[in-house]
Image (cartoon, rainbow over all chains, first blue to last red; front, side):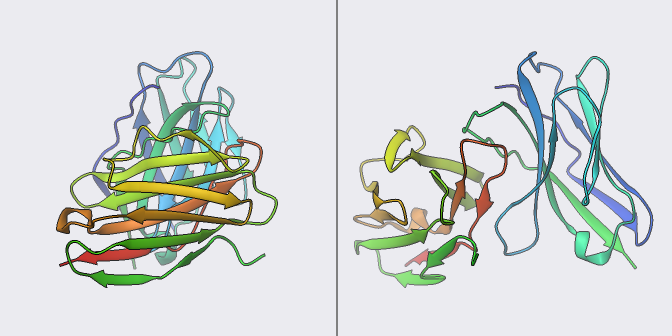
Length: 110
Length: 113
């Protein structure tokens, strides 16, 4: 499965959009991009996933570049409760071997 | 649904003792996963089951670790004998049909002295 690269940390002002980038330059055609987050002392929580089209749900939007070598998770109006570590994972659909890298520690500031 | 349930939430034990961690997946889910999280190694997949059958245990660190799933509603992860380097947070997760969403439990914080 393709590896991912994320910035170790980011800050965002409360109420503003948080844009979290992820590079996955070795992604293959049948691999999806998944995003999970982990709020302090809790288990990881699924956010969104996509293959090549942009996706949106009640939590976030996922923008995948046309060459699929990178993606951006967008939290449109970040709140203090969005402070967490965000993980970008690339995996074949129905693959189970999730590999969680160090992720991006997002701090939403008041 | 109550979500994935893990017990105990905290465990402190002495080196050499047997430790058993328990997990109840979400009802109807057919996949169950065990993860370990440490500061040094991050979140690692240890083993996962499908329909109570272990599918991939390549992440299990060594023979001191064993996992069972006797039925669809219960799984255990056992460490015998425990060592200080086993200190970590152990998460259980479940999913339905091998889909994209794994639901994680609150974790068991294990400290081996």
